[in-house]
Amino acid sequence: MLQSQEYHAAVAAKPDYAEAHSSLGSMLHSKGEIDAAIVEFQAAVAAKPDYAEAHCSLALSFEKKGNIEEAVAAADRAIASNPAYPEAHFCPPIRSRRPALFAAPTL
Image (cartoon, rainbow, N blue to C red; front, top):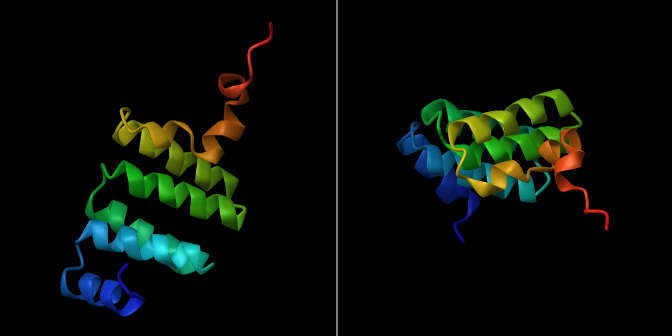
């Protein structure tokens, strides 16, 4: 796994490298640096608007901050940008917004 300084160097060298921003955001999120992670995920989707994984990660970060409306909007953008990306349909903000889709069937 790359170190923080390597991710920072990658985004500094190529600011439109969406995947580097997303990877840095994921690392920051895992360290609990949610505000910084949000900045990186936003940079990733600005560089690559159809990057469903980054939209979903942004949704998770917004949810972690308690910004549910922004989380749901980001999750919706993940689905809209790539309906075939399965994780987008199962982001917690989507699950909480559409609980009937995930309820266990009654017998």
